[in-house]
Length: 124
Image 1 (cartoon, rainbow, N blue to C red):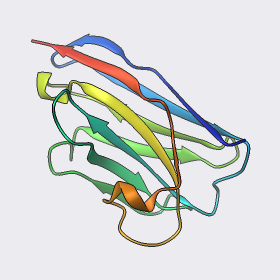
Image 2 (cartoon, rainbow, N blue to C red):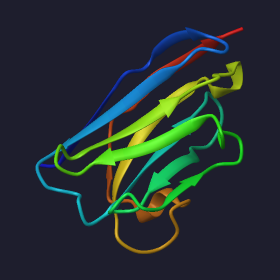
Image 3 (tube, rainbow, N blue to C red):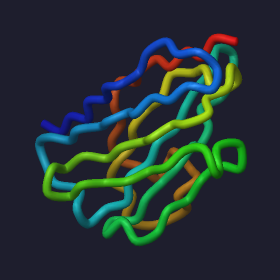
Image 4 (cartoon, one colour):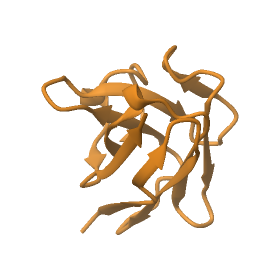
């Protein structure tokens, strides 16, 4: 059974940092792209960042570009999201996604597996 388990969320003041981790088990995703999405209350799930299977290419939403960094460790079957200069508008549940082999990185429907989400709250 495939599982994606996110960790690292929490409450932080504006301007602070958090590092999210997503550990995959049940299968390896070393040949698939992985990504992070987020969903705020009353809003649709939105793309945050994605990374190609080798880690050589990364993609970011305009709203997080320059502040967030996605990385992966294929040996550990883990993807990370380093979030710096956090803003109150970054408050959301953050979801890890894995298993993208084709199609747009930005569309959640192209990912096969999802984590349960981790809450990130940024206070002003």
